[in-house]
Length: 502
Image 1 (tube, helix red, strand yellow):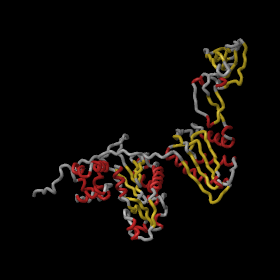
Image 2: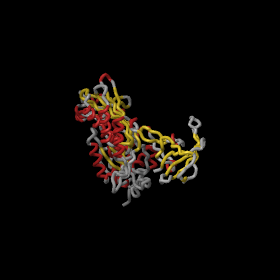
Image 3: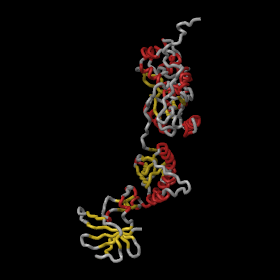
Image 4: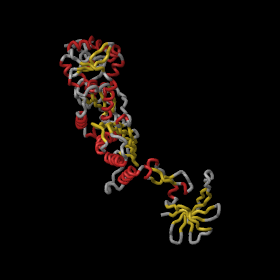
């Protein structure tokens, strides 16, 4: 029996099933895997946390008329649906309340969610009402796909947002599956054709003209598209539509912008009534510190400057500034320093509200841990003690020696406050003693019992500030074996002792 023309296989199908193309491996040698987090009621939840308390809807403008963008559950029970004209919605639900869609509020919520999602992936991309996470690089860290999905679901249960999750090798496929409410977890690009083929064509992000043309062509599901010639679809629906299908099925790579949050932290705490009690104020600050520490850990940052703003009655404010000697993201240490400062300083007025601010962050440096002697390789505890002394006595009270760009020994160092200190090293330290006399000790014109052990080092300078010197320096030993640092003053010919080596 011969085959009819209609039943004959196409010679040039759009996506051949016999040789599916897998997603291109990345620079790390792995295939991409994307997780989509779609928030179907974000426009409602951004305006009211108790979404289903009453029949109400968020409206938007389309083609010059008001339509329903999203509706609460009580409103949907009355027949109000997405895309419905507002007049028709009022006819079905006369008590319907409406609010205009707030795009900025939605974007703010989505940005906060993206900041939190960066703990699962370094590549987070924003879409309307959705997030896309590249999780291929995170599977080993979280113990596999199931463990990562369970972690994401558990964390999102603490948020007042309904979410649909889907995983696929291409970002467009993951986004499409999540928007359809299909909790699919597809890890191989070869399985995309079969899973996506079950979806109706109505889910595709196409224009009304393209949707009408697809309906007139008798197509109902995505699998119908796979059987059509590529050239014909390009001619009817355009090259952009085919480009989308290529990206949908991993036949074409897709570059996406990664979300980068601004490294600024701000959180506030309000009191039921004004208070001067330091214990209550510290409690409010300690409720905000975990959020700050988590903010830094998610971004691998640390800080050495922190501000606490106190809001008093009559709109007055006062400020507490805190500094640390080293970069820090230790919640306990920060809490101790703030407690120390509050015990030293008296607030100017009762406090109604406080805010924790941090805007100067730096990349966190994680030190190596010793295997046999924990803690001996770092001086963290000592630095924290110095932080507490600095907080109690004042920043100017804790100083240390700082090298200066100066050859004259008397002016080559200075006492510097901690917050102004810079780490410097100089090759001259290997040839100079750390113990310098406050004033050079005169030895006379001859060296009795002293043996020079080095060549001459001449130092001249200082004419520009009135302290001109011309000296020849030597290392030497005396009869007791002490290692000395001497110089001969070329202006008067006398010998002087400048310092001693250890």
